[in-house]
Length: 112
Length: 111
Image (cartoon, rainbow over all chains, first blue to last red; front, side, top):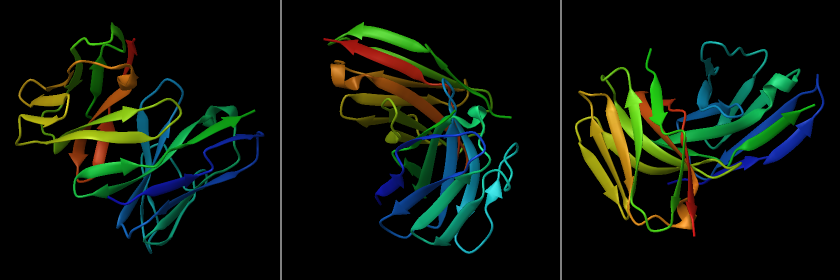
């Protein structure tokens, strides 16, 4: 299976700023996924990112708040914009091989 | 809308015990079911994937079963070790590469 590198691993940010999370895979994958895990909660899918097209967002998530880029088959970024304390979560990128999903190590974000 | 529940939310056992984690889901029309392990502040590690047509999968000390008709899956861990301490998540496949996650069971195995 491909290896995912996700960074930063953690960050502490000020309210109103933006943070971009990067995810690098060491082989080409068709779809990549971004998940959010709020404190004490399970994972929720934010969006699906295909190379060369706009990301598909799940209900409750919008592009202005969580813009995603997918410039090629090995890389994707998720930006958390205009952050508030409610955005404090772990953000995880993911990709599939067959029916299995594999995950990056996550970005632990704290917003003050 | 598919809902996935895991019981218990937390479990503490002494080393060496066999244990069972439970996962239930509301819609039996699932694509597959996957069990993951999550260490604190980390991403997820895939443990086992059960196809909708299968009833169980085994990997080492882990055995996962699936009963679609009753909307249940169990993860059996044999001879637990302190290194097994983590949160275990089950996720139901709602479509190809589309998962709905459970709330997790936080396991602590004491030496």
